[in-house]
Image (cartoon, rainbow, N blue to C red; front, top):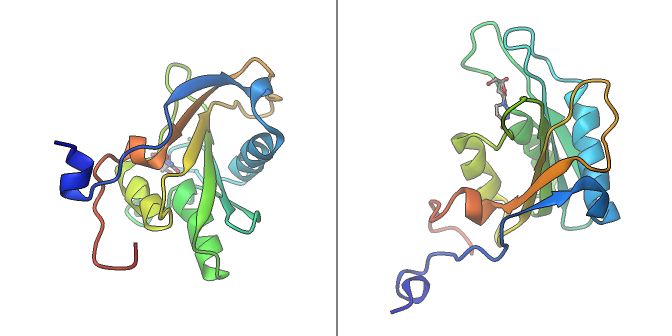
Length: 165
Ligand code: THU
């Protein structure tokens, strides 16, 4: 039996892969560059770990965001949610792609669990997510690796409720 048919769960529509930055299409490079620019504005005096994110809305407009920390830690907002909150508060609630950029030597920085659920809220269908490293003040190299994944890959069987879709 097909589990997706039986359960109504959503199947990932995008196969995860590694791409080279240079091989990406121009709209994806533009999205990554918007995330890099936002990372430069990260407010991270507690972790010193800047993150940038950018989402392309259905009408093609890009919204970017950085992480914003707080002295009491709990109110910290991740870059992904900053970008989406900016967009939603401007009336944009559906997105076609996202990018997340942060630098860790030995790991790609994928969205936290809370952000995955938040992204899914505004992605009625699976959307591609491009995760990449970028050091401060270093130009993105054409050979840099990019993890091309998607929200359904990052949050399999994510919670959906009674709302539309
Ligand atoms: N952070 C993000 O902004 N996005 C992620 O995908 C992972 C974590 C932030 C939250 C906090 O400001 C810092 O990274 C360290 O956890």
